[in-house]
Length: 267
Image (cartoon, rainbow, N blue to C red; front, side, top):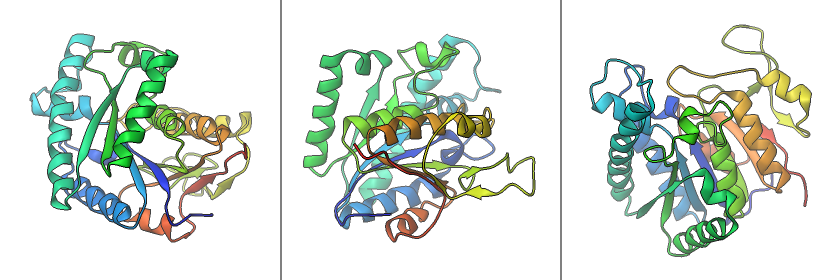
């Protein structure tokens, strides 16, 4: 790994990392994440956070007995959850004297060249001002990502890669609920082996990635491979690591071998 002293990093955190088994916000983990990211910015890095969890958090705050199934309730839950998540992020980052900004994407925002350029300019301006952008899919008004079988952003895994490309990031780090990419599902096979480095993403890698992930999120390892494929094709090294303890980001910056590194194609 070749971490420069000043590095632009996109960090993606998923629903399973941000919430606990009861569906409540995992406050300890969110606060720790805010502390670590603030500290990394203090050390000279530029930080963009891509955060999932709006629907799960909103459904819990609305006291729904189960995860909403119809589009109306999903969008309502997303609207509530986005507000709750940003309130907590603003509070926790505020402890460390950091300013955050919310950016909500729709698929159209990156499919239309003018909108994509505007988003890139917004991200660049926020980073220049020392502000930490917090990005999410705009589920409260967009039904494409919630309902489509062929999702574009895939629980924000692919969105994080899009953000990394738009912002010309040096690194994309995806915080998962397992240690990285395995040769088989570690939840099913005790002898599964972690693959620490992947040079080329081909069909064999996608085959190993399998299907869906945890019950609270919608992404799985396959969507993380899709994200890595997009990011590495743009020359961005991509890491998938366990986000249970956000302090693992220090290990990444210290060049320790953690998780799975998808090696960027040199463009």
